[in-house]
Length: 257
Ligand SMILES: [Zn+2]
Image (tube, rainbow, N blue to C red):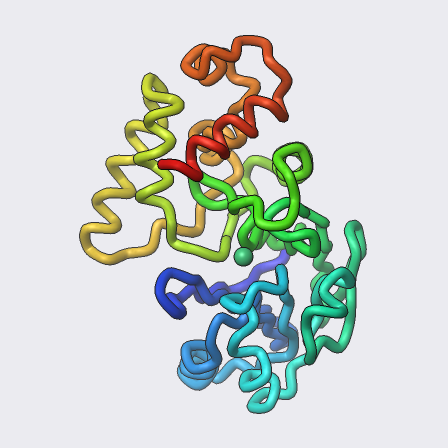
């Protein structure tokens, strides 16, 4: 187990900025850069020296501050090979399954296409942390802009089968309250979901973030990961249907929620 310190902070309207710092080596990694200023503020306050920037996907609200942050820190930028054409300013490229090093810390790139085709989930295995970008949200998942439902279901079930339940999950957006309201329409009798919704409402009422979450919490309450659950299937009138079809139906309903 590797000990790291993590800072999470708001960017733009509802994006998250995340910085992971390894005190022993001094290595510090930013995940995505919606805007540079909040990152520079955290770096100034902590005295951390940004060494790496890891990009999850090419959407503007994840890279808008990249050029400025690189200019001011000289950090090395690693992102998806599939973004090579979409993005400038990347130094290194990864594909599904590649391992990189942030100082002495091994970080695995897990290809999770669906929201976009290039999407990478970054897994700091030994630190017990994953950043799922716009693939897996707290109680939700990203919209299907470039991939289809089958592709996104494959990505989400891959995460569910790969990341241990105790993994701490960071993601790209604070969408949890509306995700919870939607989840209750799909999984109304889920007591863990009802209780989690109350905690989310209390946090949002005082303006606090609902992230990070854990894989265990998502497995028990996120409807997009629960397509194989009989209660969810019954509520959709899709008992024993194909998981990808059930996922597609939940995604369709969320798009119209
Ligand atoms: Zn996105």
